[in-house]
Length: 325
Image (cartoon, rainbow, N blue to C red):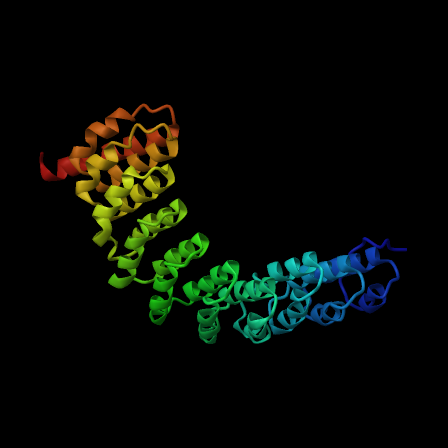
């Protein structure tokens, strides 16, 4: 006789086991269905979304995440509105893994649900689906009273990468919530247009250091990011080393020669990550003026700092050799 925890390869006895009186046995059957890899399992799992045991419903939500498609999405949409938070959270996590654009049909109506958690979960799931018809509800959700919902709406907009959304994202960089502003700045990274770079540049002056950090990082991903070179250099004096680190990284990517000395002044900072980033950026720029700074940390106690410093010195030596100096 097989034990209740033994896996099986077919679905013949699925319905019988799913009707077991013991919730633990039902959960075991659900786990096996999730691991079966058989698309037919979705039908069996969907029939369990109203099980009286919350633990069973939670297991159903987790198992459905193994089957990407509209049928699974429809079942998970019912679990996302479950009164038990653990069940709804498991449903949100599973839905967020889906990639099939057809899943959006079952999820879109939930964007207007009365509970903020459901709206947030729905938008989070729509992000990876990248369907253009999700732009309108996402833009509308930027006016939601819940900041977490607005953050997820920005995620949808950012993944769609449509230039028409730039004005709305720019407006969100002035949102009263710092998490929303940070998300908006990060989402603007997809655009290589100058207006996006200008909006991100303004965020370097945000009151919240995490927003400034995101702005400093995002400018390095924008083709027009160099318009903010002076502001990024000024950010090297930020009170938070995390902001300085991202500014250094972006200046290095842009190869801004006039940033060598400001970056060099960060090379002996007590935070090893900052020294490592400074050495890497100076190596990227490879200006001979950076050589004295890199020599200072060529024997740094941190191996990553040493490696970057020596790599930078090699790049400068090669540049000198090419120029004959």
